[in-house]
Length: 428
Image (cartoon, rainbow, N blue to C red):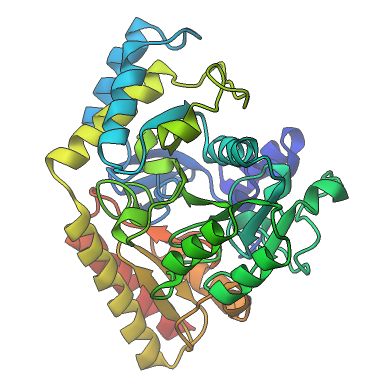
């Protein structure tokens, strides 16, 4: 069955034919693709075509698809039972492994998704501080909980003025509890905090933004954000759902020289399964139920199959850290695409941070905030995306996302990606 037929079938029973909006190709147009299987760095699409995958399940598949070690660990766990709703020894083991790599985290709570981790972090910050307001950055996406869909990134990208949520169904009073400032602007953050003295519970941001495209922090920005939050009596929440274990064994905030009060982790640490975590010092985490009055629960939290995948993933990353090789491959892709774009006079340049990258349809880098990202040529990016897909490379279907390489990618894959870009840009 071809993609058009599959999409028509899905649209009859699923809103928009997809279970997550960005899969619908709204940002690039055309019929979304359907995947039959994945192995290593490649996907076999439902129509039989094989493509190199630079999406990697939005960053989760750092070891590639159907990694034999992960599959074996999952099979062993599933054979013992897929869910109990009762604590298991492996949950404590995984929590110990996470805490051991983060010097400013004493305890973690396992949850099922990045959205749930951030939702818990926000409630925890409000419970600990006794305050209501949250400050977030334009273009940073922290999941689809009500208060954080104001000026959100990723599939919720909005052209609003920052006072309206990117979704219907969110009451205005809830939206007003979220203040919005530009990313990479410490002065605007300090001004927002000063304008609401004693009312802000937390500042939340991505240490390296990945939901308006790859937007790294300016030098000194993260430290200035932490200092501004603490000066106002607010907590700093670093949303590392994408960042954690993506650039190093642990969190990027530590490498950046800051110690956030609460952190969230997801994607990589789940090993391809629905698993995320929120962590903080014990004094903060013990405010969660059952020891404290901040309630959070989940039937499938700490699911034994997901935990087995997570532990197996950490085992592999610690035994043979892939980060230097991942960064080298991402750098080679970025340099190759940039050189091809320059040769063919196409205003498209790659912005990269370590192992992640975004081809922005512009000849003006760096992109430092949402305004810069939105100024890029969306139509040109759409043509580039489809050209690459036709040449066997699946990029993120929006320039407001980031692309990834995995440990399963090879130098031959990198060469294929660069040649596909050369041919696509020549055609453009």
